Length: 349
Image 1 (spheres, rainbow, N blue to C red):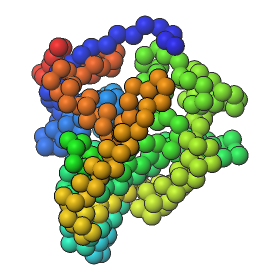
Image 2 (spheres, rainbow, N blue to C red):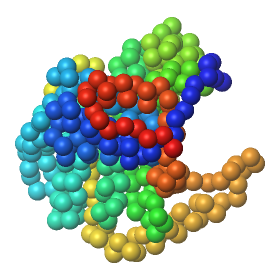
Image 3 (cartoon, rainbow, N blue to C red):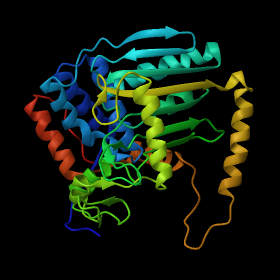
């Protein structure tokens, strides 16, 4: 499937985190915010979700340098009513406003049983699973969604006006990991096309159409065309609904060029103790997980996994052994770090 060979580098997670954090600090972010950016992006790489990890670092840095993102935002609650709130991100990195929103949703859920916080005037927030995992760790069921790039057409149409709006949902279990679903409403996340281009790989047929509406295995042609929704009209319908709660309801952008300002996010936390003791929920979740994983394997299957399980295994292993990264992405980070005068260095293992 590979068109050209590509190289990988296995990098120590801590060195990558410190380098990325230093880069954000050098372009004006307060040290604590920059440290969180490093933590959040490297967490995605540790989990194997490279599509939303440090490969975005240089793009984010350029957005800060150009003034598209605000390095010192006043992330503020604009509306606060009982179990709900609206946050204006002040053009912050979406990771920062999303953390604030989920923290607030968790706090409110402990008082009201469940809470919803929306964000507007924000930007790309990375992997949603990070924020729903926050809720699961706090004894809650977490839900999150965000507005995303418009790379799909409406079912039955051809115009690229439907977003890939992802969703994430997480709940704790009696295992070392939470069930944590994080998925786009397209067959594949749009950033996977960029990864395929970086690696010189083709993409499977069934992911995308080219600009003429023909199936394509060329990721560059797919970027000029449209991605296909997961499940046909079902994925399309999910995308529209998520656009409503993340964009229309939040006061952010929605549709193609409608509303605003900025991107929008939607966060919910449900306090499990409002329904049953947390330990009981975890036990019941464990029974469900065990039953699913105990299913007879299909021919050729290597195992049955729950959402978030593989990612937890990746993270546990890579913290010790290092993260296998695309060499070109790491080379670019090193070049821009040097440009910014960062003294931290990546450590290959």
